[in-house]
View 1 (cartoon, helix red, strand yellow):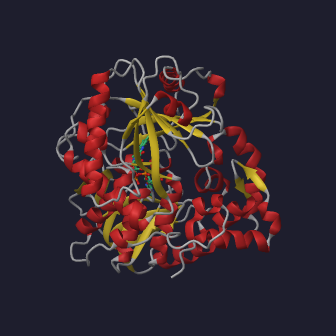
View 2 (cartoon, protein in one colour):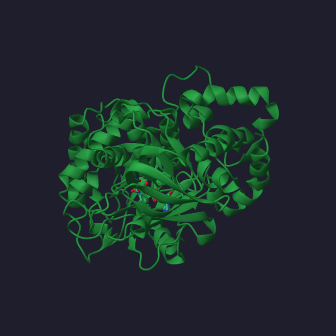
View 3 (tube, protein in one colour):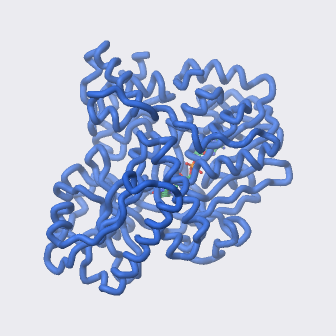
Length: 505
Ligand SMILES: Cc1cc2nc3c(=O)[nH]c(=O)nc-3n(C[C@H](O)[C@H](O)[C@H](O)COP(=O)(O)OP(=O)(O)OC[C@H]3O[C@@H](n4cnc5c(N)ncnc54)[C@H](O)[C@@H]3O)c2cc1C
């Protein structure tokens, strides 16, 4: 079956799901829901999967994009969580998404804020993390081990660091996804290739164990989808559909710096947060040259917004922390954009494997996921992280459909994984993996599509997203299939191209 998602397929499959009964209805198409749709469809079950907005509309596009081995969980004694992360990182790097996930180096600059004792403790942690990598079967060739660098070497990799007082740096490696929203798109398309009906702009209004009342947000039409099992994968919004699910969302903010803002930066940075032991802000260079600086961890009180705002207090905090290691601190005017996401942390000792601490700081709540069954049979899967989405999906589908065949996703390559035609442009290979050749062919057939739009994106990327990646409007194109929209003026400049791409089907 075709993996391409587009408006014509959506219209056809929307008609199909109104009649009959599917084995599994998945609600929410972030990384967890897309993963559940793929897990169920690849077990041979019939699947409908809906999202109120778009693929990766929620938290899944606001992550730090780390596919991490769970080092910080080791530090807090959550060995099971760390192990699960290391195993899932290996699955993505080696088998399912080698085109989207790769190793990336990070420097921890040894400034006066990091004493020799703390540096030794961090290095011990890195070595333990490396042992976990080996135990999880991920070879060093895919994820190199840690080492200590001289100050000169650190400055060669990160020239904007303040040389004065720099004793060197600790170098560590971890996995990183090239774009979290694109990971979700790849998972959803792979699910579609296994027959899942992936329907965006379809909001679940009410859930029950045998289906949901759904509204097509494009027409306002309401209808029922009948299902033998229902998985609620709506992240921070899960409690809106299943009120017994108690969450404590926590806000994480990132800054977006323009390419070159930190010189020729060739590694990420772990920046010590002054006054806190072994807590770091992150500097994360992206494939498009932009640099993200994150990240905060603030409990969110009150209603959960559709798109969280990054408050100025978070921006000022991150600039101040970053300034602590830079030769020339950055001003507010050098911040091109900022974004915030909400972690769907499970509240209460029962939810998150018993490790959550009720009433404490959200930074201390467990990052383990929970699979919760409500009395009417709806299975909610929540918590966890991007890195462990596959395991979360397997657990959720296993709970919802206990008699289904075993999960196959640990060995199932995602759309775009596979051999790449030699000689293709690196930008296309990084973005499309094995599909890069098809995108290049599109540009050759329609040469005017090679026109650049913004942030390294061309009109061809936008047209491809409309034809194959389920983009239905300019927001889908600029905010999720590409990340142009992270900088407001880039969004405005690219809008005419996005509108042109939507009419060019
Ligand atoms: C700031 C930040 C940084 C992070 N960094 C990392 C990282 O580096 N590495 C990592 O592994 N993890 C990271 N995480 C965690 C990770 O991003 C999340 O755990 C994960 O993305 C949650 O995905 P999800 O699919 O469960 O939820 P979401 O992505 O929020 O998806 C839920 C979906 O449900 C839909 N929905 C809601 N209500 C309805 C309804 N009524 N009907 C239909 N659809 C509905 C929404 O539109 C949304 O698309 C980070 C989290 C944050 C906040």
